[in-house]
Image (cartoon, rainbow, N blue to C red; front, side):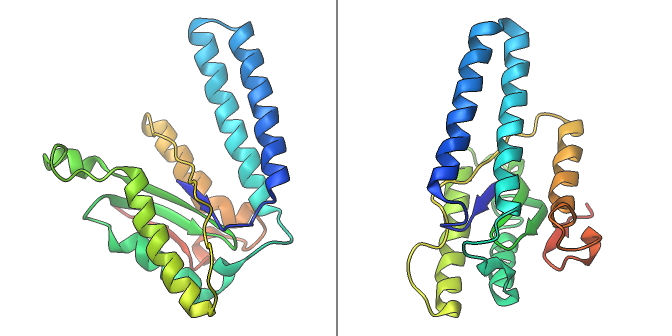
Length: 193
């Protein structure tokens, strides 16, 4: 799951990126059939996400509240708050204007809570983002929208993809030039389960 601060990327850049993606998607669906089409679409989706993430990493302007250690601690606390309740927390990294979070929600299904108390990703994110926005705004003595409404999530299909996503998350601060090694970033977490 990736989410960013409200205003981290200008709407014009988001619209441009989305338009490019939609055009490539349409062309792919027209040109390819069956399994080839599905694989091409998955590659496009991955590229779209990577392009979006590059926009976040390269931002010289816009809010950078998560670079404040008090605010980063507030968000990290919310990630850990629901660990073992709604999900198993696998990894996260908190950047200056966005975060990457990897959770495993299978525990809700395994514990046979699917029919009665299952909490979908959208509601989990609403709880994390809602509480962190409230406390962060209070700490910053500000009001107003803190997060963008949407979050971007991807379903992990296999062990290879899981390892790739973990590597992507923990290496994000290095890739963005914030630190030399992910182990030195105080707001990168990797479960040792």
